[in-house]
Image (cartoon, rainbow, N blue to C red; front, side, top):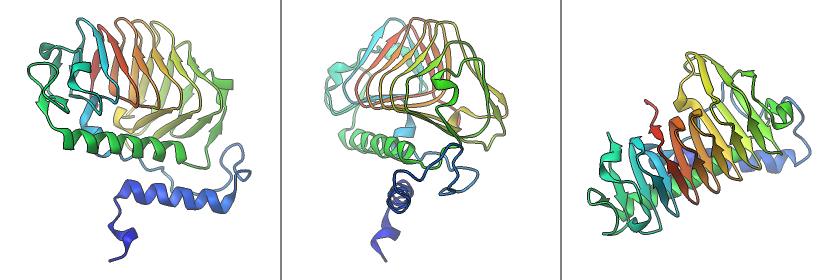
Length: 258
């Protein structure tokens, strides 16, 4: 059996993307994605074990009581002492820690968390490495008020959601948002799923930080290279997967139905 055959699906896609980029060169991608390097419809991002978490962080989870998280919660490689959620705040899931520190109800599983964090990093690289975007710098980074259909969206700027944005399509449609800077959603504004779009097929890859405004509602998996901050009363139907910290302030986080 060849070495490539033994690779996981996510690692095969990542290797394939790197080969495509090497062949096409940095200047080959135009507005609208003229070079078809990916299948249509686009494949969802494989989250691996990271997909079993509602909240996963490498450097800690802070919380202003009381939040409500439906799904697994974990931090690694930082110790469980960096998990500031209480046991009653987590339902339909388990709090995982790398050591004996943390909430009294936590489960210690260093191996599982190491795999999940590795898969988070692989998923981030996969999403960031997708080529031939359908839209580049749409709205100059302001997507509030727009209705978006499936595809790959790429920005070299911050992305702002100043008013409601709607994602519309079928249950199989995949949305991947590549954001090279920060993502900020204004207070009391919403990401809305229309038609049969499913939160499990929506992915936000953010190289900078993410801020979801007070009482705002968000949909989809956030793969952030830095911090994810949920402001007071904000909600998400999706996942908070951060390579630094996650901050919660009386939020509701619900892992999407698979």
